[in-house]
Amino acid sequence: MSDQQLLGLSVSSAQETLLRAVYGLPLEAGQLDLYRQCTGRDSYAGQPFGEVTVIAGARSGKDSRIAAPIVVYEGLFGGHDGHLARGERGVIPLVAQDQRATKYRRS
Image 1 (tube, rainbow, N blue to C red):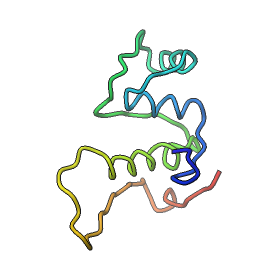
Image 2: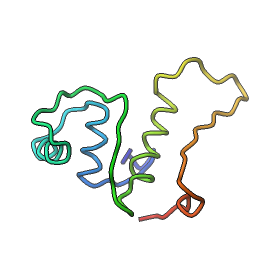
Image 3: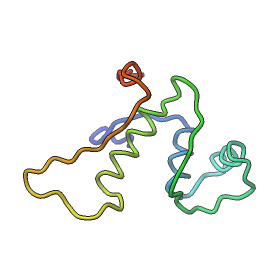
Image 4: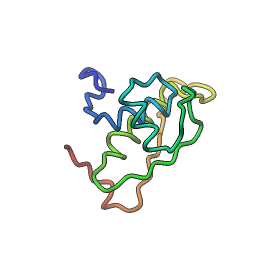
């Protein structure tokens, strides 16, 4: 995600913790503390979640820093069946609440 040859995104420690937890990746001590604080859970199982609900404020990066990379990753490597045939175009919808929310803001 942060690789300049791929998406080249910078994420906060909270955003990285969220993404690591969604996929069940190991968390460092500080990330584990943040995970516990945000989820109210005593322990971290290190298992991927099948569904995640994120409550985040405006300008928190939930679309450009969280949702978009997940959509791209899942579209390319996720548990979908089959493959596109030569010449077919894949479409991955990322839905916003209104047109105003779809404007890209570079931070």
